[in-house]
Image 1: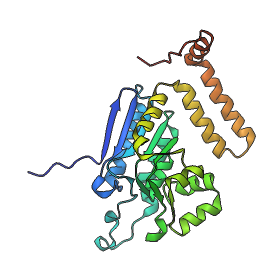
Image 2: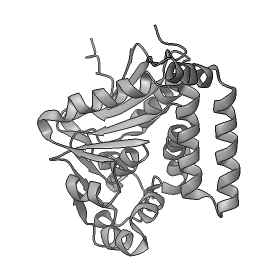
Image 3: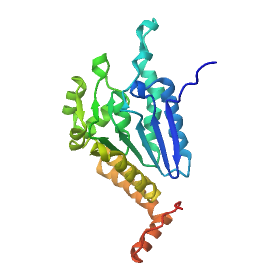
Image 4: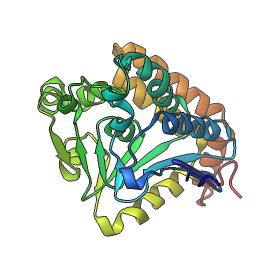
Length: 268
């Protein structure tokens, strides 16, 4: 009888919180084709579940994600080169688009090493929290590759082209504190406080006004990507308009005037 293989992606629903765990700890959660398919399916599930109000993505064991599992790319096993453009478009891009398009806030809890495409997954979160001993490794050039999984965009937007070129072309790395101080990630948290701090953030988001949080996510994204100020103002106004029509706005104002905690929709 064949031994049952453990799932490489764990999906858990904890009340209003959806938890995705990259779970190949023996391989530092390196990504395989099947794992990417499962990650995409998990994100679609949480995006479509009305009971889920916030999502957290993290890794099992001592790493967040070591990037692509190169054992799947062994050139000795085939005569033709891999079509990496097709793989990006089929396997990676849908995940990144889902993470960006879902109105639900996503927290990426970088519990250890993130390398290559693992860095891209980490930075695709809306709030990126790094454990103090974690690090980001930009390893593409060391295996003869350019950048992928949207990471070039993230680096240039956060650090500028000069720093992005330095990290990518020399295969550099950033410690958690440096990543935080440079604005690449949201926070660097002491190792012993990391899990509790991430949980506080996730619970706060899951208990918040969903339409307002979706608008904030979209507005910040527009500010980073809009070609001009007027384009940004248009998106910002639409997000605020949606929030204004949502019952949570009425509840928030009433709670303020009545000097009490707001009771947002969907909470028990």
